[in-house]
Length: 291
Image (cartoon, rainbow, N blue to C red; front, side, top):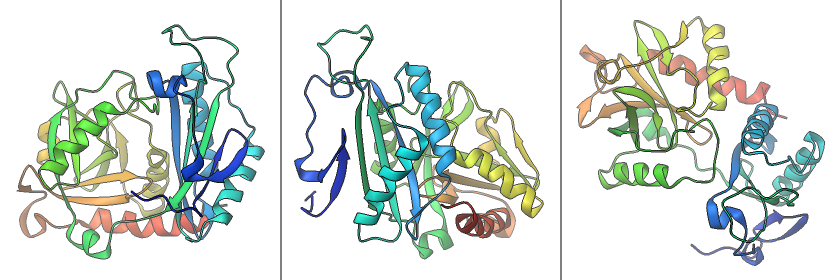
């Protein structure tokens, strides 16, 4: 990938070209993956669900005992300056915070200055054609670590899971732990059963996606039942509809799993009506909940 000279980023208080950004090889993010990240969507240069992202970032930092290096106001100012410097109207803001630089030791050193890195890139949402046809997924055992609730930069398990689907020409890998749905390699997963939207309960094995609470609000808005409960693999494979959600995908219909069509009857292998209603509600939310 060629990094364009005009692509700017923020690193430890400085705004500089992305190609010039460098961190120490002793940074604990590089050595241990000791850090967290957030990805914030930007629509028309306005930040979507900014406070929800800040709240989740604070939860992840607290679980790793890393102090938050900025206040909400300074984060907002920093991010808006970077967004304004980029040509794209719709962007993705990537924020990474590591514990900082120290001699290699597994024990968490106290008093370090966290490393702060922020960059933005043009958003590449799913195409109209992709949304019309839906995407294919495969299934796999969830072999990642036990603390999926932390939005950690230690993503090797997710990388391996995502590569599995890429090798099969699929968009995502749906993960199951002891036969129960957790999430996908880079998405939350939802199923529709008898008109209700169901998702796995929040917990150590599932990252609390920003869309968890957002979809609950959208379901209430459009009159769709919403429930979080354990979902067996058989319930996913036999669902009326299956969807993915993430900052980049928003919500996206899954129409094939392990080569088989999702759904029943005439709707088998096609995006379903619940997806359609939620997608429309999501577009309205992008206007209302962006700052």
